[in-house]
Image 1: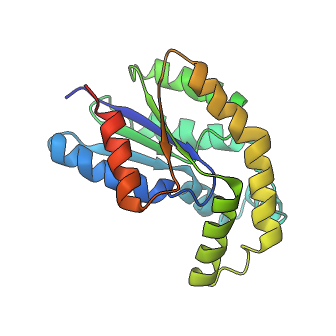
Image 2 (image 1 turned 90 degrees about the vertical axis):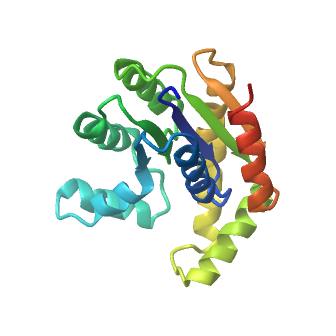
Length: 201
């Protein structure tokens, strides 16, 4: 099996993390000898903002205001991780980047530099109403006080402003396989659609 690269993209609350884990299980089943490198930029951001640097302090303040962090931070983060970890002998799964067209273009340069072939972009499409409902449910379940309706609305606003144009960029880019799935289904049905479209002959 050739070394695959998957980029998951979609609004907050669309279930990307769950579908990433299910795809990783499927990859392991199909190709047990090849390791999977999973880049979850949100987790790395959370670790970064806990540090004591001035940049981390500024980023924390921006996060508390519900703002989208500058793209250069994401680019620095995944560039550093790629340089230190990619060997060319792994499947690569990216979740949480890119969030803007500019970031997508820099990620494209990086993936070509590392000779990642034709990456597959998996767009989990849900409506803003669905996303809002799922995030409110998650906030209540996890007792997350920072996930207020106002902060969720801010995230949905920057998703529409920044991420949607990025999705459209990938939809048109012939250097990528673009796979769109309906995220407003059960977890099992979303996974089934992902597998059917990703591994179609």
